[in-house]
Image 1 (tube, helix red, strand yellow):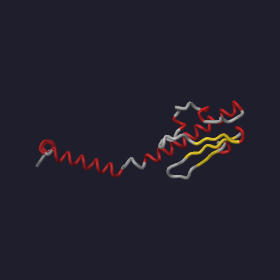
Image 2 (tube, helix red, strand yellow; image 1 turned 120 degrees about the vertical axis):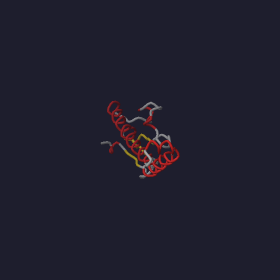
Image 3 (tube, one colour; image 1 turned 30 degrees about the vertical axis):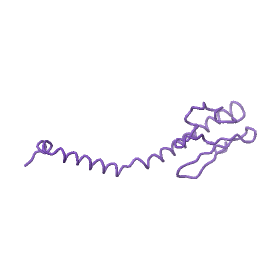
Image 4 (cartoon, helix red, strand yellow; image 1 turned 180 degrees about the vertical axis):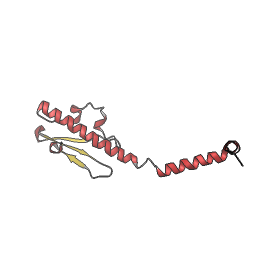
Length: 120
């Protein structure tokens, strides 16, 4: 009867194949690719939440919403851009600064535009 040590010494190819098969099965069952869109969607949701908070603070301090998001947050801040496309989120000041429209394109949901009334 072969012991485990003898099997390992005599059969590195068998061990290598077993590890490869286990790896392939693991990747097949736990494919990380579908997780990426969900992660980006969550990041978009968090970005929009953070932008809305900053918009409300800006409005309370100045009595008007900014003309652009770059007045609110430094241009290099990651909140300003979509995590997948790297395009800036769409923002527009409305009603002479008394309201705004902030739009985001989702991958698995319809485009959503928010105003100050949507802030919770």
